[in-house]
Image (tube, rainbow, N blue to C red; front, top):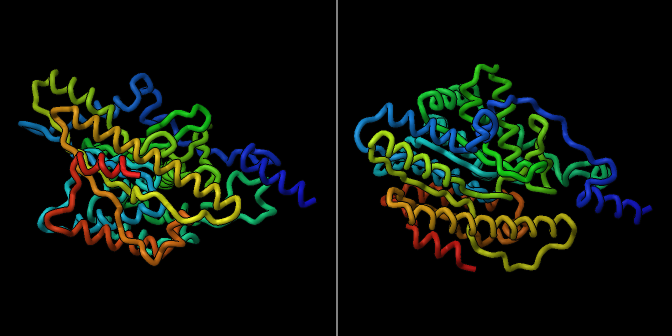
Length: 384
């Protein structure tokens, strides 16, 4: 019997066996997808076109587009939350009002709060001391054979929806209507494609606010659904998982549109990109814990680290080749001594998230801000 259970568990995790099935589907409507019809023909370019066209129409003179890109990183998202909190409190160099905010996985959790503006920054405080029980609940051994993942993310779903208040959704919709954009990335497991969710478009839609909250939360949960650990989210008939499987930072579509709009309008348009890297880019050196879940988590950490490094190198090198781009960033290089066990487990621990948030907040309040330039970002991404 024990052998049969073990075989069934393995099949459930790796082969979707023993009765595991798709979670219920949430219907959000085709307008929710920036890369779907009617914009499918050019993917994210349709959204970037809207962004730049409205910016050109509402501003005179040389135009600089301010972009914030928030990477994946699991519990390291607490660093990004802290940094952005401190940055908005920085009187010498206050946080700008970004034209475009993008997020992947952990970054997708933070992006709506930042996009809505400093009036909602208190929602970032919840990332300080965020622990495992605030994010997920491990399933029992008997539940695993028919489960789509090792853990239930019911706590994370409550965490997200509590922060997506009616006022925040309203402000996101207002900013979208005024010409700003809020985009997050997830991976469609059925097609294996990276799909962009336009949260601003959903917030500005004529749906009831509860529907908006449910659909925005589903997209955020899909973007952060770590394979195996968290169940994918079933939205409009497709399964979505961690956007970090495909990319961490997605800005390339903007350049083609920037060039076309600049030429068509005879305007000087530049891009200022800020990267918040929710990761230390320091490889783990401690022996991995024993057990299937520990092995899966360590493998996920290694994969995410590699994709993050590649994404940083890709976007920085791309930006440096463009004469109209300026790029800077910050990396979560927080000293986690004393949190080593939680750090190497790679889940969520209050010691880690408190330390990350406090360090990020302190750095966000610095004058001058401790930005890394292109060379420093590339060096960090290349170091192993």
